[in-house]
Image (cartoon, rainbow, N blue to C red; front, side, top):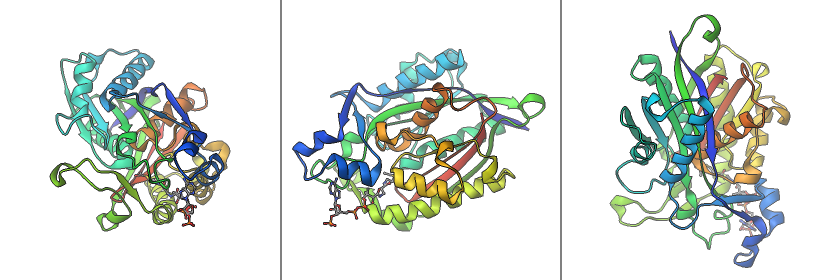
Length: 322
Ligand code: ACO
């Protein structure tokens, strides 16, 4: 059958970098606490007026350059975000216009921090079914706009940014037989809404701020991330020992380490960017894929496992061979 293979990847980070120590001026916190509890050292924040779609356009352009493609070579844009510029239109259609793309279709996907995994699953299904041949999958967020700057338990953990991955149809024979997306596992459980949510939205009349019960989220994360990655590997007929790179959602270094341990993967096989990016929600996986690829670590033919969990709860994993 038809496979969705990786054609290019790129990312964008806003210019402003905020080191942990900057929070010491306004909050009862310390670089030492943030570093030891989360692994985060710094994060990027969007400039005033800089939006999710603008960052997504920059990431998409970088991915097009990497792929050697033009905007009109893309059939569809699937953009994962919880922080779109406007209630509507979708950020994806803003990206479409921003790239000067005059064809195809574009829409947003909302599964919070698991958004990029859900968007890749979406793109994979469209490519396998023949609905689209080339899909630009983007994760882009401005979580700095939904922080409660008085809540030291959350506002030090998040950052802004965007990453983009171009997936392309290839016949699953010959050289492509073993490449591309090999398996997907998606889950959600709406009973857990109260441990991670934004206390506002369109139909409640405010923008709201992120609220998190960190310990509860932590407990679910470690268990569910290892389970979903195992399920996806099982579906692909592969084992942990086959994995070249774990590219996890970058929320917290302790969650990343615990998940890697459960998958029996040494940290040398894990792409970690959380120290420099913080938690960028749906943008964290494409950012990490782009950094890992452009630093020369992820090579053609490498088996990559991505996994993420976020508000909902929603969680999942995609296994692909680059
Ligand atoms: N600086 C200093 N002290 C702090 C800070 C801070 N920034 N934040 C919290 N504390 C204090 C707490 O108030 C608490 O004090 P107390 O014992 O006097 O009450 C103490 O530190 C310990 O707090 P805990 O919450 O128990 O700390 P924990 O070790 O669990 O670490 C953390 C907190 C980092 C939030 C952790 O629970 C975590 O990472 N959870 C998962 C978060 C996550 O990954 N979320 C993203 C999911 S994806 C998404 O969709 C957004």
